[in-house]
Image (tube, rainbow, N blue to C red; front, side, top):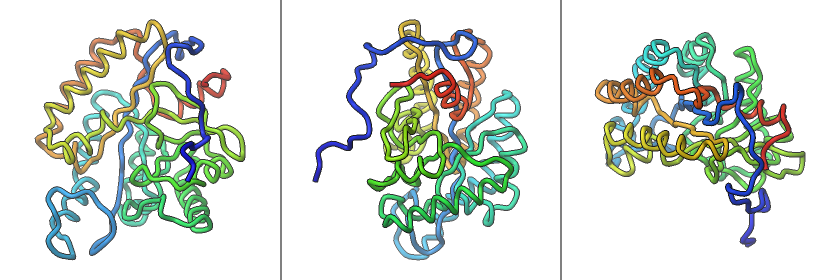
Length: 292
């Protein structure tokens, strides 16, 4: 087995060309919101507590809460703060949650692909099946009006062929590789594919479910990350992707702390911050020939 992935070379962040985000801004911040569906009676899924039997009513229903209630609660918050987001959509949401994907589209969110469902890790698929899945997901999400240009694999899972398949299908960027604070270029058999930063640290699922923290700690992570990146951004342009799941941060007791930190950041109106979506980050990089 190779010890190298051969997708990108080593490049220390201190030795790269400098550039600005639009309007001379220096820190790009986007919210990546995961809209996911799961199988009933099997398949993968985050657990609030260990499953005892199948069907796992408790964990399935807890996850389903996000699509039925939590997402709409977060829409209210984002509308109030005039925040567009990157909607990371399982294509099965179109059939299983009528109106949810359309609501993301109608409020102006970027539509990005997140596989078919979150019941199966993409990296376990054989090449022909994975290729068919990517094509199917792309066409189904394109029915919302715009063909998606960004991809996040279910469970941040890739096969050895995934970047090649995405590039062949016309994707501009992928969010799976959390290896940098700047967009970088992945080498594929079909040209370059941008890796846009998506945090596995400033991410409610590992923070709250796996590390057993709560919302106050998580939003403190957001605040600290922004403070640190602002202290660095005069030397280099940076990206912070804040990852959210409606069944986690859309719970009633977690929205108020999230609202406080996002409101504070919006109200400061710091001229260094570019509030954006992942696709606009990729578009800026491509239009200006940037990224290592």
